[in-house]
Amino acid sequence: MIREDKEEIEERQERESRRKGRTQGAGGKRRRRPKRRQRRRNPQMIPVLVAVVLILVTGGGIIGKMLYDKYSPSREQADLNEYFHLENEQEIAVILNDTMLEDKGRLLDGRVYLNVETVYQYLNSRFYWDASENTYLYALPTELVSAAVGSSDYTVAKAKQNEGYVILRADGNDIFVALDFVNKYTNFIYEYWETPNHVHIIDEYGSRDVVTAQKRAQVRYQAGIKSPVLTSVEKGGLMYVLEEEEEIEGWMKVLTKDGYIGYVSKKQISSVSQEAIQEPEYTAPVYSNISKDYKINLSWHQVTNMDANENIYKVLANTKGLTTVSPTWFRLKDNDGGIESLASQEYVNYCHQNGVEVWGLVEDITYKDTILDYEIFSRTASRQKLVNNLIAQAIQYGLDGLNLDMEYINSDSARGYLQFIRELSIMCRLNGIVLSVDNYVPAEYNRFYNRAEQSVFADYLIIMGYDETPANSETAGSVASIGFVDNGIQKTLEEVPKEKIINAVPFYTRFWRTDENGTVTSEALGMDSAAKKAVNNSIEPVWDETSGQYYIELEYEGSIYQMWMEEERSIEEKLKLIKQYDLAGVASWRLGYERTAVWDVILRYVN
Image (cartoon, rainbow, N blue to C red; front, side, top):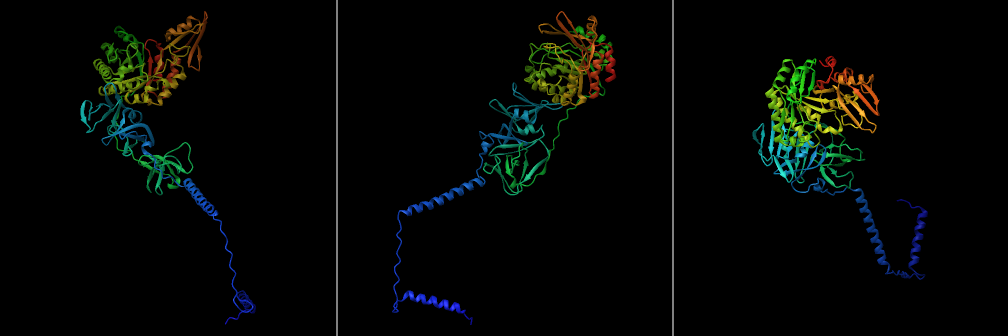
């Protein structure tokens, strides 16, 4: 037995004694326990207590909901028709590479169609839509492809072919072309989805940054868990990474494989890796060109009537090392593709006997007040008539080349003019005729000439490296300062390969007169005439390093006369640039303005 502690025994006995004393009186009888007085409850407090409890419960619920709403991701699905800006069941959104275009296509009979203007702006500007004749054209190296609205037929060099689907469809004033037809002549891949309708076109290939969904990831319209969900990417799915000007913390802008552009939480994706977009098998057409195996030394010969052709004997006799002469023979005379011709067989024969090629010049200057370049070049019928007329002349007279000198092209006629160059190049290529095109020194105001596209089809592009200060200028200035020429060459080289560029120099200068009232007039002078002006006025020309020209100035009877001269030294400075940039050659405007000694200078740098 465990022995109890003495103190514990006494304490237990004392507790027992007190218990008995509470229940028995002195005579040993049990005493009644007095009744406990009950508390009286206030019935008015019950609703208050209930209300307090309800407030606490409700408040806690509201706070909990607020916290949940604030910190939990939204499950709201975005309105995808609104996201893609689709207004009806036929519209289809267009995603090009990683950009959603404003332009909408059409999904018709299970086939994607794009507006012809969308194709021109974003996929292939070589397609040409002729609104006046409802014809869609594409220039191949030796053939012209043509399709009409509402037909599955099209022609290649006038031979009929059939695609098995309608190639072009009209929707009001808009024309839509089947994307499959565009794909025949353009290097891209595409995939489309319905409900909502959207197509993803890719024409940029190579490695792309991608991320992988680590778990099912929500791609949201904007960065943030409360933004509506565009789509979900299953675990392991890839997304293209899109660059942003400003990085948003915790989020990444992506393009999903099924064509949605949005934001994904970085917690749901892997680190960035690389995926290669494989370029499809596509054989691009080869636009072959004629390239001479010598530096070209060309000069224009101004021919204003048939009698002027007889001057070729004298003109050639005064030259040295000339490889090519370009007589101003052909003029646009109406808006239907008609031309005037001053061509001479005797002229051509004489040049060929002297080893000089003849490139007949075509110009839009003589009848500029009555003809409209837009009318001629925008319509297929007039373009084709002009092409046929020029090729017929070239073949008839045995010309070696044609030289286009269209100086009144504007932004409205530029697209048709480029199509004319394409169509003319087909016939030139088939007949072994050199095609050269004259262009101004590149500037913002003539950007639409699109020298890069010209150079694909033309054999040579000639920079008209003069008229820096044109005859109608309000201030006197140089015709062709060295800085102006250098800039023209450098700007052209940004668009055109050097082996296709010929730089033209002036054999003329302008003698300027500025009156007291500020009126400016000028006259064009050849090299000898300009030198005589200085001699007759007893003025010694001073070499100006800035312009790279000799300069004279005199004041007479209140008027100021100025001249920046073109002669052997100034021409040599320009020829140094041609050699420095290794261009295809030199051209000069015009025969008869030069001094004989200038040919020796040209020979040192060109031949």
